Image (cartoon, rainbow over all chains, first blue to last red; front, top):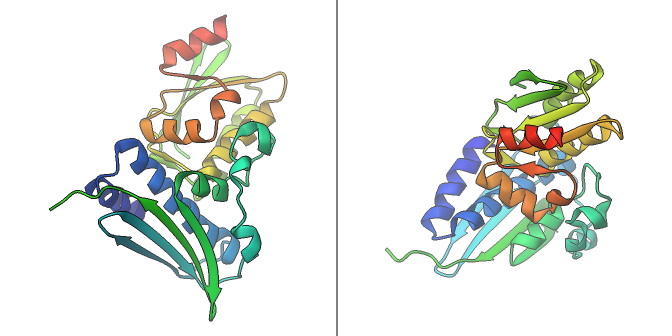
Length: 131
Length: 112
């Protein structure tokens, strides 16, 4: 995970994401990967999480793909941003913020499943540097 | 989890010597700090100045420590790096536990 975080952090920086945004983008990618590892694969080692990063002039897209247990698609595509803050979730709740964090930071978060592949697609509008 | 401890009066200054408190380190964090609480520590200053990344699992681990300290205990956090600050701001953790810029400020807060 640290290697992935570093690589993607560099890509975000190259893409022109400001410093604060870069941290949060990397966080979102980590949260998405954690979702696959913890919830789709129940923490079992030896499973694959595929990360695809697409950078275009106007957007950065992370797609995190697994072949584990499919989440409730409707729940995953429900707005959970109200759960991000301490007060609404229950100040000391130890879990449950991951999806809300992704939804708060990214411009869109879409979960889908097809032919055994679960895909979490995170999109952020960025102003990429011109080469 | 690698930490450095230093007694300062009735407080224990705990510096986390890890770069990340993510999902893969959250359990170790809880266990390490949990042992300190088990031995009787109740006022903990958590120095996160070496931590460059924390995710929601890491945050959950800190909250777990806070719950374990209970009403008789206190936890303050200090030295947070920009990535951690972004995360804390996003999740409004400043409403849950005090966050200070430096160790000195955090220790001084305990003395008030």
